[in-house]
Image (cartoon, rainbow, N blue to C red; front, side):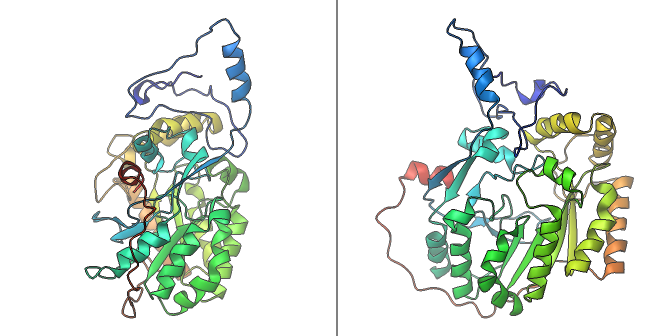
Length: 381
């Protein structure tokens, strides 16, 4: 097994390799790990065998879990929703910049390769949602689906967990928004479109670049840029309020495309737009910098210098109020560019207002006997 250095000691040099369809080959040691492993030659060819295994593209493992709860609360002042649902933990899209990668450490899994190959599927999400909405104490509030990991990643084609969640919300006339970079959302237009026309649903499509080669490098298993534009068209044509998320904005990588991305999205039918500057929390930082050295070695130092200018001299700024937008001259310039382009193209700069007045709670269901053991439910809730 390869050595798993700590985050603080990762050598940021282009020594890693690309695996087709994966964002990284690095099983980086998560920050909660208590041990470090090193390769050891036991005289039986173990090291050579590991080298052969590492050349084989790793398959995806889906871990099906029954969870105790599915609604996650949020009190962050810079996020425009109070409740969210993430049907999956980990994401096979493999986006190298994903700020959710460090959460795999809570499962004792690597935020690197494990995050995109060990996917936890919350198979009873619809049941738990129905129970939550049936509670007498529940007050309807916008629910965001896929705020951390994509609700329409490849596993959804078979498991249909996200569809089950939307079926519950549609039956209750409960407002929801979806953030996705997958064309899989089109499968559920029969549910989303009527809700969208009633201003109870909206979809935000993440479009980070129009360059197919760059998209394959940054987001190896997500839909190609032209396919996402077709998804925006399909959603808009069906009457669904659709926005575009140009996130993250990475200086000197996709940042020069900002106006062109907004123009393409508006032409496809998007009517709102937002963006978030690159965030590098915890384990994302060494993973992203390793990727940057491999794919853009000539500009890597320049990219990180600009990131630090927008982050108060640090690689990452976790503070509310500035973590999404950055600070300083360059962050202000990005906001001005976004605002001016959005105004010119008729793109709203605020979230769609959705209607919760027609909400009707579902009938309460009897408690299920096959509920997961407490230790599993706590871990995967």
